[in-house]
Length: 69
Image 1 (cartoon, rainbow, N blue to C red):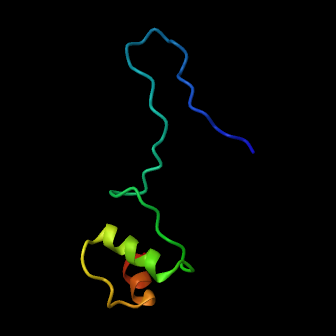
Image 2 (cartoon, rainbow, N blue to C red):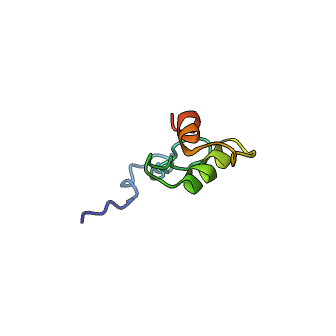
Image 3 (tube, rainbow, N blue to C red):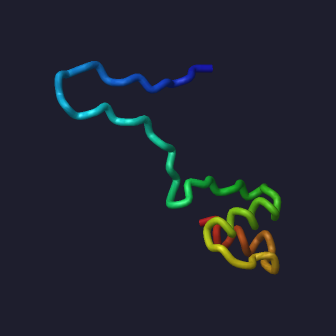
């Protein structure tokens, strides 16, 4: 397996610091959407992170439709 590592840019004599590695930020909450095949519990947790509230009465299909994009 090939792993990428962050290495600072060579010193160019400029005062600007090197750019940090990408954060992998997928959005404001930095969480990845569960797969459609994920459990309802995983979809409930994801929905709560996106929009805090009571989603327990929703079916898995409703959660996917509303929060699955």
